[in-house]
Image (cartoon, rainbow, N blue to C red; front, side, top):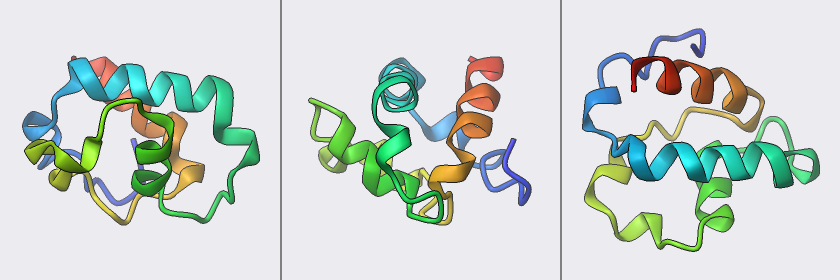
Amino acid sequence: MPEDGCLESVAELLDLAILLPVMHDFLSKQIEDCDPEAEMKEYLTYASAIDLEELEWFEHLPDTLQVRQALATYTYLASIN
């Protein structure tokens, strides 16, 4: 889990059935081309065929998460799913 624990309070608000596959695709196909310090949430919007920004629950995904935290974020969310 990312160091600051920002996911614990919002994880139940996220639609993991949508988010986890998007994160998986991002991790397996696109992460190598991304700046590790960049905002992960923004890159996920590029990686998804779904317009994540239109989904109400997506606003709860913390903007503070960086690309370098994507694997830890995915692992944590998958473990609570």
